[in-house]
Image 1 (cartoon, rainbow, N blue to C red):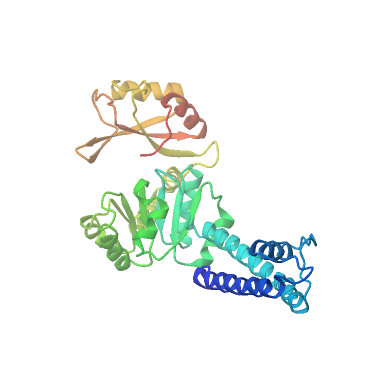
Image 2 (tube, helix red, strand yellow; image 1 turned 120 degrees about the horizontal axis):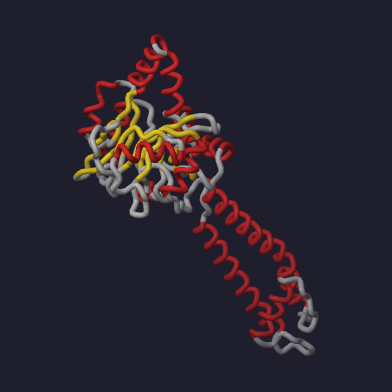
Length: 351
């Protein structure tokens, strides 16, 4: 980004001040004590200079000598240069402020959002689903041209963009990284992702990191490096393809529920945190299953309990396991069921 040259501007202003100081001194020397002269003091000279530069031209103080008028002519002609300089600096400042805002250098106040490091077509697809689900996303990219593309597709209320080198960790804080719920490392290849994970965790240790892998065999390596979720693209696509071959209806439904439901008739799988005001806290799982189906037309399929920082999933558990504060309920629902459930739970979905 082109930044304003403050040093050059300062030197220019200093030079103008020095020149005008010399001209004022010369004008006083030429006009002071002259019969009929009106410029006899420093205050008179400065008043004449200001009236001339601002094009007011009161005419109460004017030079009367030949050389004094020549100095006054210099004041008149220099007015164009001074105005041009001032207008140019203002325009440059406004342009810089606008570009800083477009490039995200003013920072964002997003909280509990998703930070995506790197931009590509896959990242755009992920953002579309996140925005549709009501999540805010901060995108960090070092490709200047992608900024305009992102602004074209997404509102700044939902997606914030930051133009930065990925290893400039101080500048990365502009994305409010420390307040993010998840950091998605969306770089070119697995090796680059692994090296970047090791480096970024030196600066931001206690964050949830997510990566997608081309090589599923590296999943344990990434987990050991501190990644919260390492997802193999090939593993997911191969499972879905196999499902399409021998049970296509299950595959269609599976593909639908792992994405955001755009239409009222489409189903989605969501998880909701159990907060203090939730009426289902303390209720046995089986009773919650039937009550949720009856009240909201949603299907309870599992419960996640966080124990000592580890998330333990109970998939449709048997027995009378009670629902506790801080648990997550996993449910299948359509858009109408989601709206009903939000009114009952009084909370948005997600971790």
